[in-house]
Image (cartoon, rainbow, N blue to C red; front, side):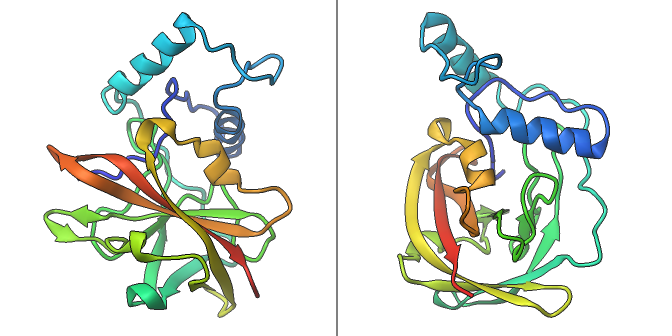
Length: 221
């Protein structure tokens, strides 16, 4: 099972320096469904619908070059603790893009993935996005019980310098994959420090999942 982390829109082209990649991808994701010149919502006509349907049909089928994450700074993310899920300092690792232009994810059942080129470090006042498997190689993944979280549940993110930041769940929603706006998930609400957790959900079809469980949580201290 592959945890697909995408928006159902035409694939992104990634090129140039690492910072240029991050800026370009973030900008494109931020305005999914908008006219590139005006920033206004794109006209939903037959052509627009056809492009969206084609991007969904071609998703994960046109390989390119994977993109590594940027090198770590003096402080990095170390682990995640979620008491309701029985997670105690689950390791968090850095990832970039896979060969198909998707946000890359861990290839095991115990690691949580973070894509540092496209969102903030906890404690900086921005938004941080984490993804992990619901199931991998026939075994439950670290986010297997993510749907059990309810508003009010708390979690803690530990940094490599020993700092710990606590967040409280505000929502837990299951989305059809094709309806997810990854720009909104990566950038969060402006002016609010938050984290987003995402994993696969719904019945599997030949190892693929058509839905995603998305948990939003805001900083409490």
